Length: 322
Image: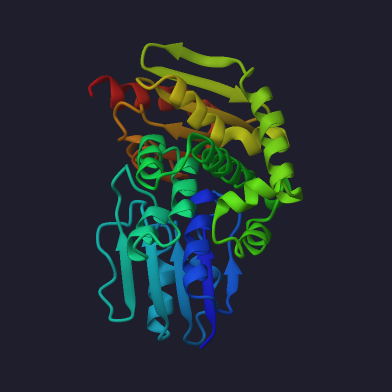
């Protein structure tokens, strides 16, 4: 039976698969893409039974394809922390570990299953998913030094940065290529210590793009709400998500939105709930046709500019009453 590994192209999906394949190496077909490309399950052929592992993509957005694979006799292992829909598939060949708690991520769920065997990869992913306090605690419990902790944080942020873009061409590395380069490292600290070409390219690209993003103009700057606009350029598409995390960290009591221009009529939106109240981002995003995500962080793939004020009003309503 052919095996497929499907994973979100950000730090969390990538680090989750690295952990699993360090424990259980296997020949597989990789299916991934930019972070927002989450309709991945439909890329698995449903004409014959297959073995499928799905990591860090919403079951709600893939339900029809999952049902088709199960009907074809496939076995599916699904690990995720996004909104899964109202009811999970009731099928003997569907195994799920889904937890939407805003203080967890897919790599941490995998870490639980593996009893912390490759915990530094889970810590890296938690930093990439902006679960800073959670990652700090795990790093301390693991006995990591301040320097080691800083290295994992930097790596997680850079791996997450690499997942953002409108297309694969925007990215510094295809996520599947990045997995192939990283899967041999039992400890991500080795990667940083080597200072090889992969790490250098990621780090330098992140620093250059973030410097531009931090100088972007604000569309809304008020108590409890901050929105900025980025131009329709590759660097802006790459930095949009990690910039959203950076803004949220700097303004823990504010909801933040990064709007990246797609064309003259539309924005790509990255939403962050206030760090002081990690909930509601998914509820706001799902009010719009192409929106989705999780409680602390969500997005809208194509927001008409004419709906910007409705977005701002929705953000105000979501968090002003909290």
